[in-house]
Every structure is written in structure tokens, then in C-alpha cells.
Image (cartoon, rainbow, N blue to C red; front, side):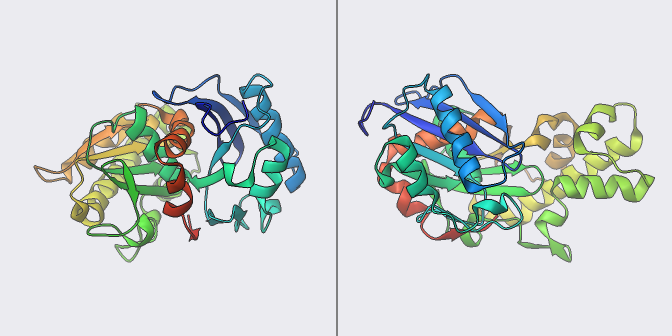
Length: 306
């Protein structure tokens, strides 16, 4: 299990509070058992790397030595160098050469440890084995604490070109006197509910009570209207065939998609909810590795915010 062409790769999804790992297989991008762990008491880069290696060994049934790895990580991050530039999330990783550190621990060459943006990984996963299979022009949106985005043409990620915002990111695109993320995010949902009720609740709590709480239902409807307007004004020029939605908020599509669709004109892109959900970034790491190994370094060259 030491060869780059052995048909398996370790994949990791590094989130804000936990990390997931699995082995992805070449061909159908099938995942082995997915293992997850909270960061808990991790406070140092060494502790973080220890956690990744423990999960990798568990995912690979202890046979991970020499296996390459791809990690889906949030920005800001220098994906080519493998160095985190995050200060507000996982601050103990700031400036650390994760590629070299992980390669040493995994027993592989540094160029066999690769990184990509978590929103890009989500979209690649849905293209390879999820809701976006067979579509030529696809946009992926992850709806959570913020809004992540990725654009692809014929299975290849694009960060520039007609209809693609700078870097493929829409979170900071100007919208209604602010930016998109001010209106399409968990923060926006929580803020709207608190303004009209004076109470503070999480998105998950609001989704659980929306059937009987008019203010919660209206909050999701308002979120859906803004999402639809963003799709109509910010994303429409890309002429997507499909827009696939993931992230925690997408677990309750019935609460916002009806009002989202009212903002879209006939002929607009098809809207689908993720088929893979939490597994999508792990699958996407495998897609990036197996479809074109060199693309992982070149397509994510430089620093991506997020």
C-alpha cells in the first residue's frame, strides 16, 4: 500500500469542530468506513497531526503507511504549499507546513499529501458520485456558518471565466448594501429570528420547531428568498445546468427551497440537494486525486479565502 497507483487514497474533511477520514477507492469513488473525531483538547499543531494520523490509521484498518492523502480544508489556506493561513479557525495551524509534517508521519513523499478547498471538494464529490453526475456546468453551494461556492465545467473546477466571480467565491460579492454572506448563512438565519422575536436560537433548533413556530418558518422563507435572488443575480451569468446545495442548512430544504424557487425564472438551472452530504468532501478528495493528480496542485494554486 505504498504506491501512488494502488487505487486507494486517504481522504480527510477538516471542519471547524471535527475532522472526518475515510479511504476512497478508484473507479466508483466508494468510501470505506468513515471515522470522525472532535478536536476536543487539541491545542497544538502536533496534537492536530496526531489526530489526523490516528483517524487515518483507523480508516485504513492500520494499513495506512505510505498511502497518499488529500485533505479538504477551509480557507484561508495556501493549498499549493500546504500551509494554513487561518487565524480564527484552528489558530494553532497558522503557518505550519502540514504537507511535510503529514508526509513524515504517513510514510509517503510530500507531493503525495495534497490539499483543496472544502467547497471545491464538496462539488467534486457530487460530480463524481452524487447529485451532479452527468451535468456539464455545475455550481456547488455549501450553506452553513457561511456560504461556500465552487464552479465546474465538464468535471473540472474553474475559478475564472464568464459568469464566475473572482476565485469562484460568492460569499463576499456585494448584495443589498452588504455582501452575500450577510443574507445567506446560518448567521443570517439566527439574526433574522432574533430581530423579530428577541430570542436567540441555532439553525438546528429553528428547523426543529419551524412546523409550529411561525417566526421560525418565516425566517427560513426569508433565507430562501435571499438565496433565490442571489442565484438569480450572482450565479445566473454562469449559465449552470445544475446548482447543488450542501451544508447543514441544506438538511432542511423543505423550509426554504419553495421560496428560493419563486425567485428563479423559467429556464433557470435545476436545483438539487446533495446526495452525499457529509461524505461529499471525502469523495471529492478522491475524485481530485484519481481523475487528474496534477490538477490538485495546479487548480488550487495560491491562497484561497473562505
